[in-house]
Length: 106
Image 1: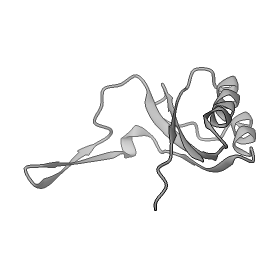
Image 2: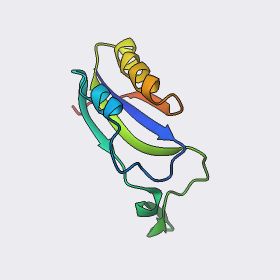
Image 3: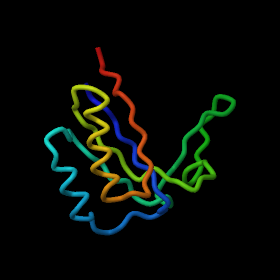
Image 4: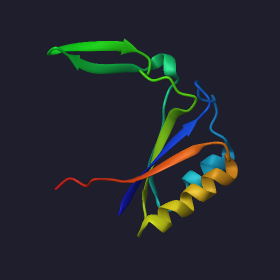
């Protein structure tokens, strides 16, 4: 089963270089793919209001934690996905990671 690990942290801007310790975790055989997001200034939020498209610069939330990226893992069960999360949080103990099963097409 595939799980999405949505990684939240206090940084509004990503680090320019990927931490080698995080890179090592991302090389785990269960990691299918991963994506780092650009900073908040590059975000655009799209909504529909009265049938028209409404664009807002940046994320349209007031939060202390921001989505910094996501990792897709292929794990036999939730415990397998949580093992990857534990490895990530050993390197970055202050990040919050939301784990959600991926809804497969079909």
